Image 1 (tube, rainbow, N blue to C red):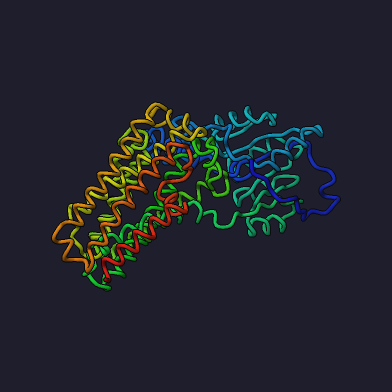
Image 2 (tube, rainbow, N blue to C red):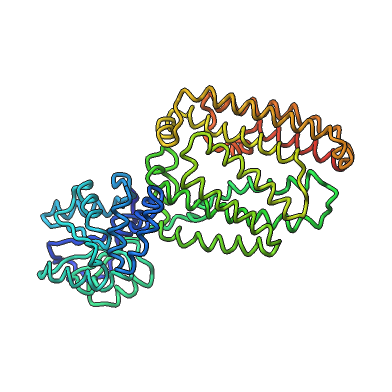
Length: 487
């Protein structure tokens, strides 16, 4: 559960001294640091995509009909939702003082009842019923009729202003400045619970540290140094386009995995899972990121736009379906890494050699296998991961063998590439490239060893740039390649 700051009051003491015995609490954005319409949508999409798509036209019958359809498809675990600790404590104190607590939400009645049953702090539950959307003026009229002696209402958004006007006393929770100003200018006595907006929550959800993987767009330029400095700007464009497309994919992945992340020992701190970033905001941010990515891609070349679009579609397919299929997930991850190199080649107009493509497929298959090996070895996540993705603990042995075999094949392909006459012509001192091979053998072997011992808690690519030994290997490899180019 997430907390709030202490209350500030805008009401006169005489106005707040006698409050009605009924406390009515809104759900989305108030009791819960999330929005259940979007929670249900993403849960339903991850569980049964086609049924979710068929449910969307229900919106023609009204939002209440859509909410009921999504609730019936989704499987939201109400036990792990990001409840606000301070709001829960206030409700408990209200009931301890002899008052009645009521949950009144625009979310579906079925969902409201599940949440109330889990928390055990509400005397009544009222929600949308598939026909009536209990929000705004509709909620205000309902509560007036239900509690003619008055009620205190706790809400968060502009939609609650109509309800606050009908209430005897108002409590806002994390409301924006305009909502607070409108509430204070009314006749209803009001007090305000403020929430800290976590800095850079959206940036965290976009995972800029993962953009390091998109530096792979520079591989075609490194492999063909004769292209010239004119290729740098298109390469940067490809990097930015892939990064924004990747961030959109990460948002989708986190929204689809909300329930699973909340039960994860580390991923539960992600912005959406923790409730520091609203699923609604994330859903709206996705098309914005994709539009920026598409525009930059198109400025470089239409072909790059096609490559970036393929990358995004493959990323979503991985998140929605294929990451739950044994071995297919590893193959698709390897393809996504290779596609970054292909996008870099398209951006600078370079034709990639078979050697480069073969090397990338083998090396990235090895890294994807290392990622799965690390998850299978991690005692905190192994049970959860194996149950979701079809792996079993005994697969560690074969997965480690796949990682080692694929990694060593990548080194063999690199050696053949270095020995190729065309490569000898492209580099001033191609013999320096031979030094990369033993470094890669050491690096791959060490990565597998670390993962098998349960010492790798991050993505292998992130581990590679944060671990001291891996950084030195990368630095030495970079120096050898630089020397092969300029000497």
